[in-house]
Image (cartoon, rainbow, N blue to C red; front, side, top):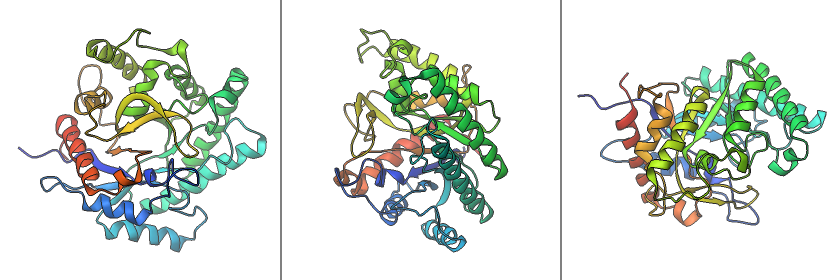
Length: 343
């Protein structure tokens, strides 16, 4: 029987940047991230590609066409493809002033233009452009009705711009973003945007915190006295969450979570990404990924052609060990064996 060759297995490069900085550890270069990704191998299987953050110090969004070509050549040199892209929208909150919201949409436009060029070069066969509200939960909560409307309006404009480049936008399900900080708020936002090219990016670590109601106790799914040893209750909650958000899901991150919140550098508190082999990990990565990759009847959705590992805020001494990436790749392979297909 043929081994599953879909979904393709990608590694994220932005963990070399996110949570790093002056008050944390130095960033890890794009070249180093590509090198470690390409060097990972488990029983002859390697990563197929990378998902990229289009921001400093890995990338200058204002680079020329030659710069886009250099990026494509750099990734191709490692025998990797490019998948999803992260638009650097944090300079202008989606619920901010008129000028800030224009800045947000312009960052999406530039990212989509790069995405289109990479597709034309043949190195980016699939993937979305990721966005978030770039707004804190505290600021959003000052006027939820008005701010939710502004976020939806900005996202709608961004979707219309993305459509001009043949791109889809995926809103990141992470508790640190206002208007997206709970599963109910996320659904409200997606429904309010009402565009065919908007969807949801599910991350196994971040979305676990939706169950616990961090930043939104009223949207908590698991009971307040929930204990992590109660797997049956956890899976019932996960089933409810994925039933609601899976129809919107167009991008997926495999990850591990230890049930706590964490933040370093300029990144607000959010789901703690753990190593694939972390003994404190609360998820059965292979099994639990199936709730996102299969429908309620257990049928594969095939809603996206690749899955990505996100390991933000790992310490540099962890990220620079090749074993870390081999362990991650091994976890990804198991997910594909259990929930993949052949094309």
